[in-house]
Length: 398
Ligand code: SF4
Image 1 (tube, rainbow, N blue to C red):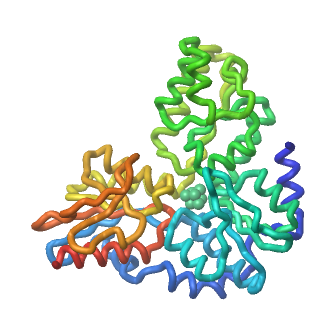
Image 2: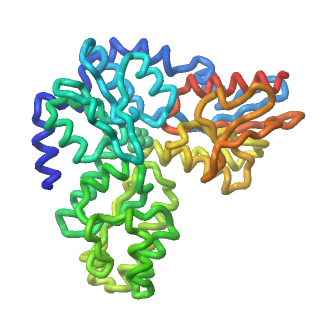
Image 3: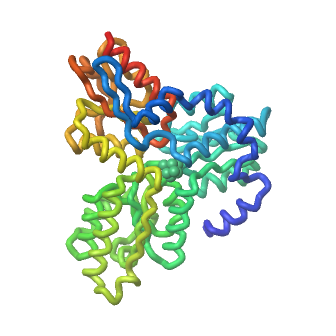
């Protein structure tokens, strides 16, 4: 499919909107009430610190809602106002945060269900309104909704669109896109749908396997078995790893993305030499500013003497998981929770260890003076962070 041509025609359709409805002022009050927090505002003003009895809380310098998420949520609220009676759907979360998604459910917004990674569009009818989330949707999904006669409200973050443009450029110049991302994450699924030939690598170890193959050190069958679900149909490593462009999911660990870019550059340099390099390698850093700021703030926070860390955000939120990774890499006792209700009752916490399943830790808070670091992912409202702090205070006082 000519994805560029499809996007162009979609953008000109009167059933497509990607700018909102000019109702910002009308929805501002509801957004503030649902998501903002006076307590967090005052902690921000107070050097990101709060002291209460034996508890000292230090908030990261940058955390919580990013610009792209605020914009997407506001557009969803505007959509409800603009279409008060129409059926409105979201494919399949506006952002990766349970409380925000619950608020939208209360506004009678329907969620398209997903089973084994496949979305079920069977309930969506002609004339329905469908909101595409901040992390985007695949070109096939957009095409299906367009053909079904739906009104599409596209809240895809411009940072994500930038990645799509990058892989489109690779395609145009017959480069294979190496996408640093999580193969099942919606953003990476969407990005791959706009790419031509592509291969998704999860981390530096996988990138190293690909580079080894490029330098003649790999086994073809083992390579194909490893990447069978992470490449474009018909991918041939002997043919498709000669001209590479690197792009990434916007929320990956920045340091790893940069290292992967350098690794591919060195590999192509070794294989083709400096004069040919530009014909074989293209790199763009597509990590978004918000991800970068939150990760930088986390690196600063974990340098402080902390007794423990609480990282707040959806369990399927990539940027939140990377914040947790930073704490864990420093050996800090760190707990990733998605909602305040994971803390208590009593001195317990239910959290998700990195790469593991939910588990309960009891006792959670140790005795004595306590310094707790807190951060939250780009899709977590301040109101949720406030509630987490409230529960920590209650526990410390108990
Ligand atoms: S994390 Fe970055 S890419 Fe994702 S919505 Fe926020 S600003 Fe956009």
